Image: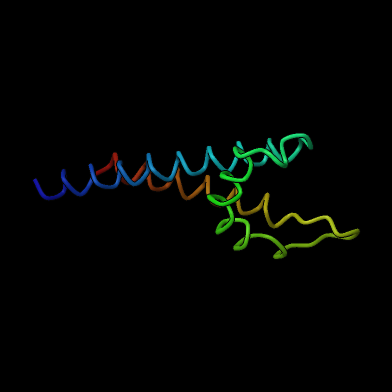
Length: 91
């Protein structure tokens, strides 16, 4: 019984983090469209995603100022999401 409740709690956390991951992806796509920089949607997305970008940016800089830390952060975040999902369904 307790493990079932714990598994359900992990699934709720998984779905919340998956929504955050999708918001990060939406923010990334919006950064490619220059006309969206000054919209309220982009400002709200930037506010929500800023903790993740501060955590990942500048960690893995390749020549020419090209930053791969953000992409690596997305890959690691998605991997951890899958691990969390698998654990929640095993319980």
